[in-house]
Image 1 (cartoon, rainbow, N blue to C red):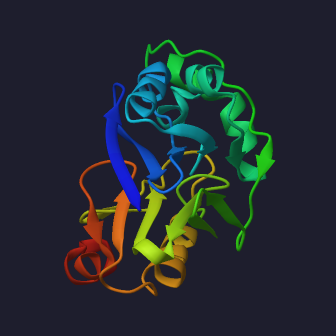
Image 2: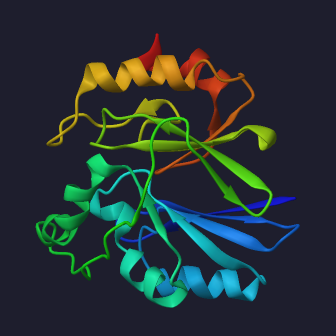
Length: 209
């Protein structure tokens, strides 16, 4: 019923996720980190139609492929309102690393805690999880026991909080109150690195001990 493709893209190998409802062939892209045309082509090759673009947050390495993907698909772009300013400044942030990046289109669909985004028969529950970045969201697919959490919780690590707009106590509070309350076997698919689970991170993550 669900297919999840993890695509590490761009200079920082940021994970983009192509998630498809195999019953309807509708798909969503979560964090088009780079190479938007490649993402669109991959979906097309597999017979999927991209109907939604979801942004966990708008650091440049998570939206580097947004302009191309939006141009290819015309899919609506979903974000939290607090992330819009950073999206506008993403090309300038990329330039500070000597990385050229096209100006991304602005998100048009605003999300908040408790919203549900339906992609085919898949339901993505919206969790508001700032701390690493303003307006950070996580997307929980309860029926399939998986959460796409951007740069909140990683395998054996957590999101950085030394960036403008980040806050360590807020991040830790959201990890404990929004993520660690999920079932231990919930798969955690994050913005960098391999998949993990809530239970593994409770046991082994040094930042949570």
